[in-house]
Picture 1 (cartoon, rainbow, N blue to C red):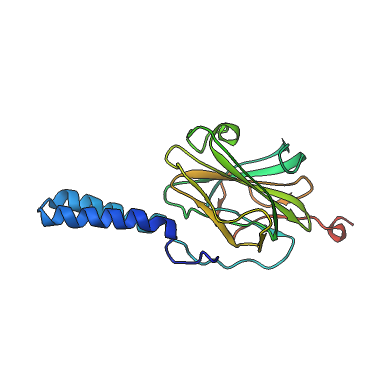
Picture 2 (picture 1 turned 30 degrees about the vertical axis):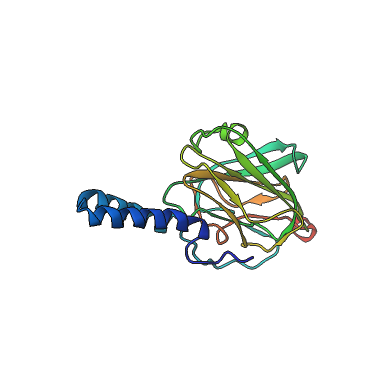
Length: 218
């Protein structure tokens, strides 16, 4: 199923409820509260926007799985899917970022696991292992890649549109996180990382890393 609507379908319930409240308040002449909920309606439309993106060419290119700011780039041991050392890029999504998640590479979904947890602010280091999170593992021609959707202080729901066995193309939408949150990507340790802490990235469009092929290494 495609998820290319201009407003993500998961957002319509919030928009409709807010509009209904605006209408009721206006009928009873509560204009100031009506204006507040009208602003909330506009924010929901803005938050759940689902823009098209220009996906870069090149099978070896890794695009960002989310909009936001790069908070950390490091090498860690990833034991769930990659099962060894991996390079991790952590991206923080503010309330003002697009919250659609996209596949960083083309590959087959070989692993999905949701883990219950806390709702600490998404910019904290410990969210990787303390917050509620959803793991999506991709089998690719360049090795295993893991993407993690993580809740934050405001974000309380992770939405994943794919299941094990699905094949994703680079830049394809696979889910969203409702409100401020964090997305992580774990890549083979040989991967060349092209971003640094503080960089702003766009999901499906910004190239954040490059796989090193045998030709590149010679």
